Image (tube, rainbow, N blue to C red; front, side):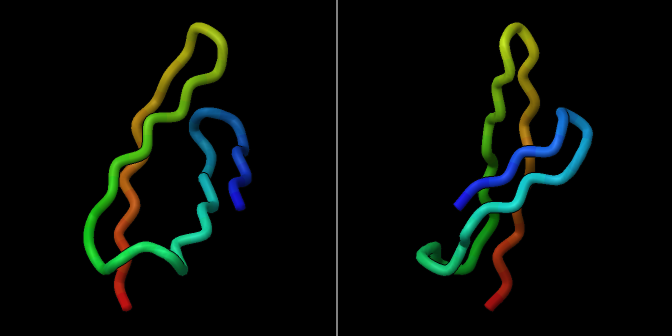
Length: 42
């Protein structure tokens, strides 16, 4: 489940299947790309 709200907004990712840790997700929108940091604390 992913919801992308513009490049500077927030990215909601279903992290229920991920282990605890820090993840970096690259979001690409046409010619723009941004890297989002996701901290998973369980």
